[in-house]
Image (cartoon, rainbow, N blue to C red; front, side):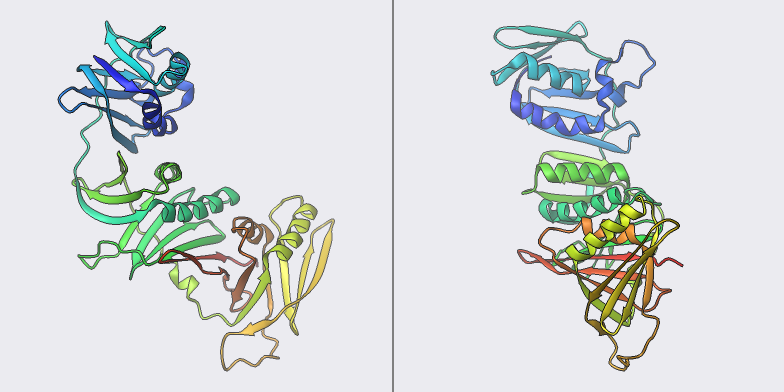
Length: 400
């Protein structure tokens, strides 16, 4: 094998593989059989006929497989297996300011050559990654910048919430040109929706997938690197999911099982609504966080005569704050002076984490609730991106 490649383009092409394969494998002794070769290396196949190389790899759990194509000058066809971290480090060192380098394989060794120097590393044994099934049905095309907004919301929610029962899984559901992205934990739910999306519903079946942690974070990385591209999601011939973004073809499975229908929680016929200043409430909750030593404890919001009383008390500390507010009654037959359970209690960290994940330009949010026993909804202002409308809502389960 002998190929000439352009340095910057090649490093860009193999970057996604660096996120799949543990960087600690770069210095392992791969000459023994104690390591799973396909977990630690990529395959580079050259095609003189097509004038390009295929780069193929998978993560350790075999949940994600990737193939991408890059133009190259092919002098001799061949195939090599090499650790992408080691190869990336060496190419960065050996090429200096030169943009063109040559890779040659001879006697199970890979030579990395530029005009002035040469580095030789031992190749590992070639391995097989099963053929990639054909993408048979397009399910959805979505702009990467829009998907990035949704994934940012989900990842912020996940990172800020350390009580997740579904760790980093992302549920995506489409209906009536609205695409929903849902993350959930034991005590809170995040709903991100984009209105104006067209998805393939020729079979009158809603778009419905549940993605695992690895593929969710991998798609986030690719969208962040390529925000101007479009991501296509396909169903494959063996009933898996394929993602096409630029020159990358990614294969992954959808998690099996029926996701609970949580949308009724967001459409609940609430009785009360209040608009609050994000900055003020966040500052108050931050003080409570200090008093609670960052432990998850309960805060109480009492509403009376257009006043909000925020109360916190534990074994050693207590806090109270009074705010002027305008309490809105959402039902026309409600009596405004009726004192119907205008107290809600919840884990203060939940609301603090939600407010911390908001954009800087989001100054206000709404709290809606029915009574102290039902979920509390946190609603945010709409956001427009071109012809798309984005909404963000959260549900907090009340404390007893």
